[in-house]
Image 1 (cartoon, one colour):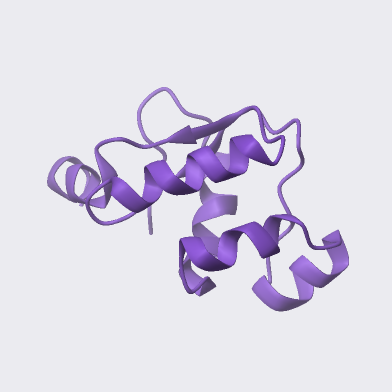
Image 2 (cartoon, rainbow, N blue to C red; image 1 turned 90 degrees about the horizontal axis):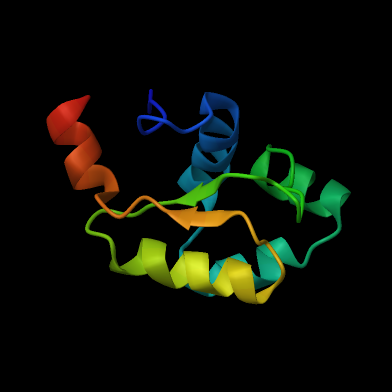
Length: 96
């Protein structure tokens, strides 16, 4: 189970982590974030993040794709999109 990075609300982090496990990658993110909430829920078994979500945290193995995802989400109006810059590697070293 992933834990939220220090100082980050656990609920938003876990919500994204659930959806991220099922996504093919950054290439799928744009269409996913533009889906109707019910379609997102049906496909990813997770609630679609709201545009006003304060901490919509993206991450990947090394950091590059997480940053790309964050930039894409911000471009779609998700102003609270954040990149966990240390990526999964940092989390696993500190928490895993």
